[in-house]
Length: 391
Image (cartoon, rainbow, N blue to C red; front, top):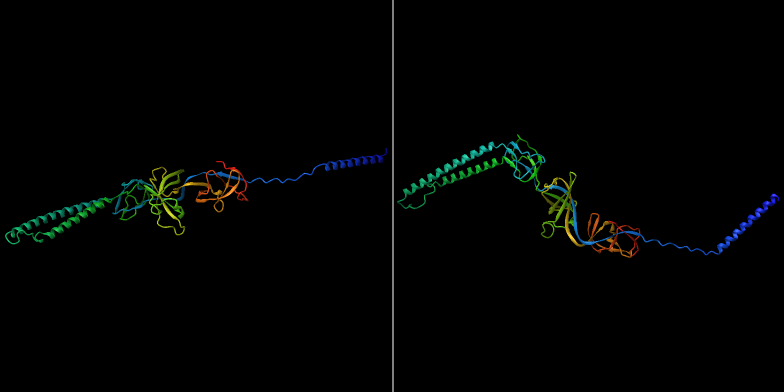
């Protein structure tokens, strides 16, 4: 067979196979039913929820301030002289108790003054005794001279009885006693004693120095009590008792004071004792004073100058709920989800914002689930899937 004929045979066979394949494909396609397009339904959005609890909820008002002493004074002498003794406690930071002698002024001049004053008293007592004896003699002579006439039985005239001289002698004696008392008082004032339990914040005197009355020698502060001034908003005072400021005659709400020093966390109990007399004109804040007793009883102490955080325990709401801030929506609305996964809008009444939490007074019930995650589009009554927050 020639080459040309082989080529024609191959082409013919290939064409037959192609035509047969097309016929078979058409037959298969004609017998198959047409597929229907089904659009899948969108899944319900997922939200994070928490289950709420209701019950008594105390209101806590937090403030911050600096620890300051209740009493702080300058140590000043009432008499002048040379310092001859200083207590080891009279140093910056030194600690002392009430009645401890802190320093002494040279007492020699004042001891001499006491001796002279005592001598004057003795002299005046002697002169008074002489005048009294002279007056008795004069009265007796007057009575003897007039015993047989009309003056018998009458009182001797004042000049005869030396009444002016006696009055002057008594006055001089009283004056000398006063001078003695003053001299003794000045001698006592040569020793300066501490008026309370406290510490030294500043010292500006040393032994051998001459001091004058009224000169500042040191600055002392009491360690028996400290105070912390807390600037608070006016609305905060609604929740707790401030003696002399809020209604009622309460003794002041309790407080807990927190501070850090020397790597330690300090916790002290305190009490609200008063509010300062006026509002700050610039900030419109009210300064509330919290007092802490025996701040130096612990080690480390609640030292003067520390920055402290104070939690004041206010009134208790009987049936309140605490929710995270993220769960509150615009207009005081929260989203609740029921057992069927239906989301509802719920209006609530807010008692107080407290840090990252909100105290709800009314509007929610025990065991309800609220949403604290966000959704791009949300409607009242929509269906959602829930994921409970784990503790």
